[in-house]
Image (cartoon, rainbow, N blue to C red; front, side, top):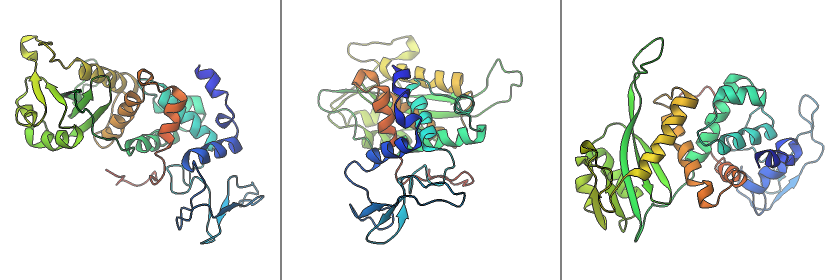
Length: 311
């Protein structure tokens, strides 16, 4: 299945890649990134860059007279990587359940390791900004659990300690997930996140942690299981769904990425959330998942040397 998808023209031909991206970013007609004019752009054929190469996809706005391509004001802006290579990278990331490392992208795509690292972070930023409605709702169940990622690796040759980072995830049974990198596991930290992310009509399920007691009263029902006594199911109360999500997340972080920095953890969480929320069980195949990921590229330009990437 994957090989047949990768045979499509936009994965190998630059002109086809521009046409494909335009259909994603501008589903109706081109929108000028300079002035916002809709449907006023026309194609500039045969314009060449300083090296004598024809500038594919170049357009000019009939209102403000500005020139642009579909790359403008996206994570692809000013990138020297061909657009069809970007499509390949996006497909590899979106079709790999536990992610794909920068080293693997470097070897597969034939780009430098730094380029592969930055490409993957640009794509993570694209899916991170995709907005999601509150999860749960009437008759639906939402599970909440926190965990830690990172820390000391017992079997490493150099056993330097690494700080553990707290992560909380909210999972709608049979539905979507929303995970968060949190500074600490306290009721004051978790309550605002839960209140905003979960519909009040939901049935709320957690472990025995006291941080959920107060906020749990705001939902249709709140029940918990006591993991400290090896209790994992009590009636309709369990947290197995969110624990399953954490198992995928940790296998990816420890097995594929090896180490995730505190600064970029939020982007890795967004990557795993996106793949889980657009999974096959919900009717989303690899090609459609890639298309949805690329829908988030607009307005999210990142530059390699900026230490203050968006939070």
